[in-house]
Amino acid sequence: MPERADRTHGPANSYGLAGRTAVITGAASGIGAATARLLAARGANVLIGDVDPAAAGTVELIRSTGGKADWAHTDVTDESSVAALMDRALDAFGALDILVANAGIAEPKGPLHTMELRDWQRVIDINLTGVALSNKHALRHMLPAGSGAIVNVASILGSVGAANSNSYSAAKAAVANLTRSAALTYATSGIRINAVAPGYARTPLVDGLPEETRSMMESRTPLGRLADPTEIAEAIAFLASDAASFMVGSILAVDGGYTAA
Ligand SMILES: NC(=O)c1ccc[n+]([C@@H]2O[C@H](COP(=O)([O-])OP(=O)(O)OC[C@H]3O[C@@H](n4cnc5c(N)ncnc54)[C@H](O)[C@@H]3O)[C@@H](O)[C@H]2O)c1
Image (cartoon, rainbow, N blue to C red; front, side, top):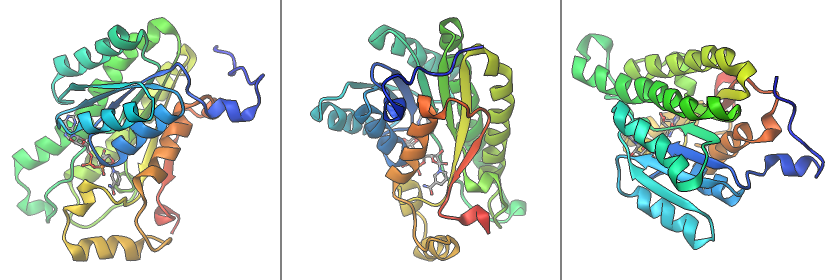
């Protein structure tokens, strides 16, 4: 069994990520970009995998504040692309200590009987299979090292139902239970696997929805507002750090009270 992290420098140090290397999928914008910036600010080397070249903007922001970051064009539905991303972490930074499996898309919402199979498959491919592939290839490097922290990004819609949410809710519920099962598989190998379940946050994924949908999201959130992506990033950074050394297989709700009701 891995020993508890060394805390000889005091509790504050356990949140630090100095010298660690983090791979984050889907960090061109939104929660992933906020997480990349926060992990870098805490000292991590950051490697982003994204289909959107705007990921270069996140890298520039990190570098402009003295952080170390890079990105690689990566489609999380393509296994060879995901494998290459994880290999690159070792080539560029010499290790892979943290994975944040964050890439995801929204679905075309509507009643299930009108669902198009290709839409269903696209959401499952990115939001579920992409997470599984990212975990698989990160674990390939974490296992020989005997340490690592994985944070998967689920959703409140993986915990509770929502009318007209189909593939997205199904994928996020599956991510939560994949997280629990994988956490049990690797708990004694020094690798902690957890997930965050964000509530509604102000990101491009939500900005693209109709105004009435965004108003509904605000009114249904007990805090009465959407999250800033940095508020989700804080929970991810915690789970990725030694401060979360006893957390294994948790699905951490960061939702302004949404699922407490
Ligand atoms: N915004 C919310 O309210 C909310 C709530 C709960 C969960 N989430 C989850 O948070 C995660 C981040 O979403 P966000 O809101 O920041 O949205 P976003 O659209 O800002 O970010 C998603 C990122 O994933 C990338 N991406 C999409 N398909 C990809 C692929 N095939 N391969 C690699 N990268 C890909 C996008 O280019 C983008 O950078 C998602 O998993 C989403 O489901 C968001």
